[in-house]
Image 1 (tube, rainbow, N blue to C red):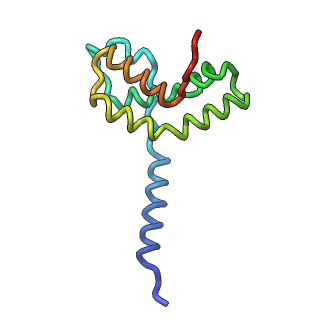
Image 2 (image 1 turned 135 degrees about the horizontal axis):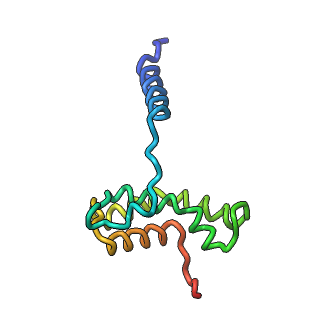
Image 3 (image 1 turned 90 degrees about the horizontal axis):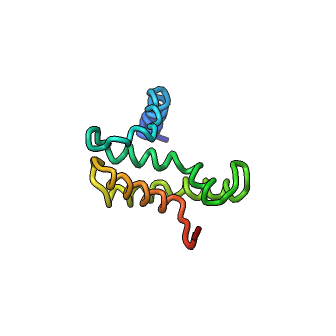
Length: 124
């Protein structure tokens, strides 16, 4: 039987990548104040989408009316996290690479939030 050299090399490369990725510095979370003056300091679309995705816990708390630890809240967070890649793709397809106006940021964040935590029929 021949030694599976290719398989060993591919698995080793994958393990090295995982280790490298875990040792990299993680970017600091973006604060909402970063989006205050987009005309003077535009942001990349990916930064804005990352911020929207980071809002999932707060969105689920608002949508369910329950606090962290409740069953409905946990289900909302789980469902929203499962939709992140689909919602990212939808937002990336609809909006420009650079967000330089409040209107564009508003539209991006509303589209992202509605995709992540749909709230149909909610009337206040």
